[in-house]
Length: 295
Picture (cartoon, rainbow, N blue to C red):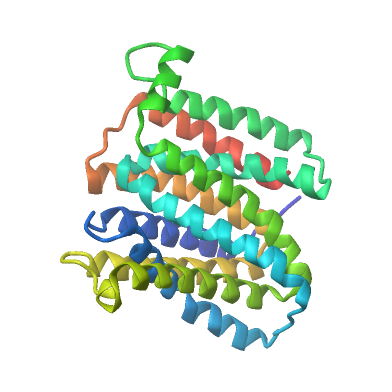
């Protein structure tokens, strides 16, 4: 029987809260601030944390086998993160964040295809629950359970297309992470990815707006700093949690925290409606996600 210490639980919940804070701040950034600039500052806040981890571990292993999967990982990271910012800016957090429950589903499928890792019965059961949960979440209130109404709601939600791109990118990322870690240490991989995404987003800002492009528009500074700090704290707590318990436990608690936080933050900070379909859908997702992660 798996036993998890209170420290591991608190660290896992803490990293979930940190990333939920980063979600809020990224949505709170004024529309005048370009998505690339949001991504630049978001990554900048994580560099000191990952640099400190590398210095602490002293594990600088890196081989030439890293380059191909590493570059693919960077491309996926840039695209997925930019689309995430676009999605949460267009639609309610409480409708966008739950869609990320599809990430472990597609990751399991990608691992089966690329790495030959066959999904377990628990993972297949979790997949079914996630599909049901998302169906419930997007069912319009007062219209009963109708497939056509749910599909119409998904089709008309402006944040869904970019979030689906995010989901695909973040679903493939763990597969390439695994290939990268086979060619480098975990700490080198994490720092390399963040710096690479930082350079790509920074280069785009520089090419499109010059040096002045790095100056945040009016009202952007606080949420940009908040996003960077929240992400850095969240990532630091996540790494600490990995040392205290299984990765699946950390990811499960982090994602369930994110689901619940999307409801609370969406309601309190953005006045998003708290509907019965949302409550039912997220409750089902909170059961399905751990099933997949624990396998």
